[in-house]
Length: 476
Ligand code: NAI
Image (cartoon, rainbow, N blue to C red; front, side, top):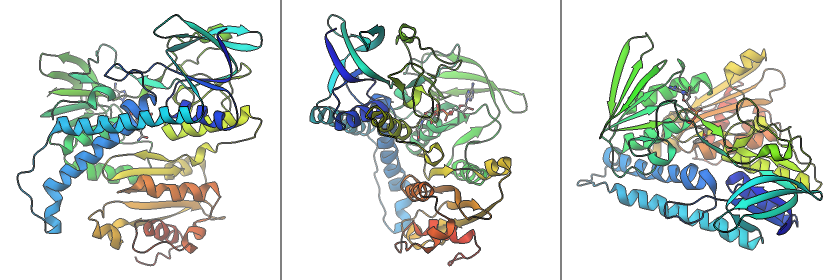
């Protein structure tokens, strides 16, 4: 065995690189295996999130929002502009620059924390003298390393539709959809989930005519129903065309366009012709070539590695975190699991409350929530109260021309404990953090109502919604 470590982490996405850093902080000798290569062919840390997911999509969302504001909303501020031009190549290059900065940042953090980056593909090689053996195949000869503890953080990959080849030119998953060379005139999106809505919004704002085809009859079924209804209204008004309850048939890829045959909700045959198609129908856990069986592990029927509440697999010393295990496929959930596992290895007793993990969809306005939805509380048979407050009655939101949306607070009818908070607004991703903190501390709606919030600020709407659960909102 070439080298022994205390901890080997497989995968350097948000779950893996954070696990590696926390383990190093706790004094362990750590290696992290990562094989990712960027479009220039250079080895890169950061996984899907930094390279082709959260970070680049947010860069393009911001750019497209600037463009839309400049073209359509500056007039309301009394600012007139003319001759607005769009340089997609520059926009994409800016996004690529941010990705490079962030991935290089992790390289710096690895050096700072003395984490060894093993470049290549990891596969299990059985046990050797009380260590779990891992073989790394990189550029040179395969390398055999071992550790008492191994953390699997291999993430997920885009699910593709059977019979629909993704070439990332005409038919794209998240990777291709972040690098269009210009704005497609007609863009089709299959799947009205997180990725479809985020990327559909980007290209719509830049001028594409976007049509979204979704299999489920209900729109954004995971959200609180009041939020999904509001989103439907806002997104369709913005110009997104959305067809629910469809059944996708043949997808014909031509030289310059794609034709999609589908049955609409009534069963009638329909056809859609687009210049680009994004397939965003979910992601599947990635355990390709890991040789889990070499250490007696396997995946469940859906491809996930089975773990307990503390991310332990059934093999002592082997943990799995992030998208490759149960729970939401969210970067921050993986990060928290990475910290938890490193601390467990160090003999600490950390714990994650999965109910207080916030969800965010980065559309415009953003959607964010934490805890239970109203329909879940009904199904639970829980007696609850609710309060809702619109951003249209908030001075800061009006001043910023961001007065769409609302905050909805759900709390226990007897104890007043906050059970769920749902936000649709600009910067909902930042606002939701207050609700997550409150729920971690088991706060009552009254607690938020009694806490001084800055004025004028968007955060006042959370306080007003909390007060509204007791019918005592001040500005309504
Ligand atoms: P998703 O699960 O959010 O949405 C996929 C959608 O495709 C669903 O609405 C599903 O009903 C629909 N669908 C499935 N098969 C279909 C078919 N044959 N025809 C039409 N529609 C079909 O998955 P998405 O958007 O691909 O994202 C993948 C994962 O990445 C999610 O689990 C999400 O949590 C994560 N992610 C999170 C982000 C965030 O936190 N903002 C951003 C991007 C991704």
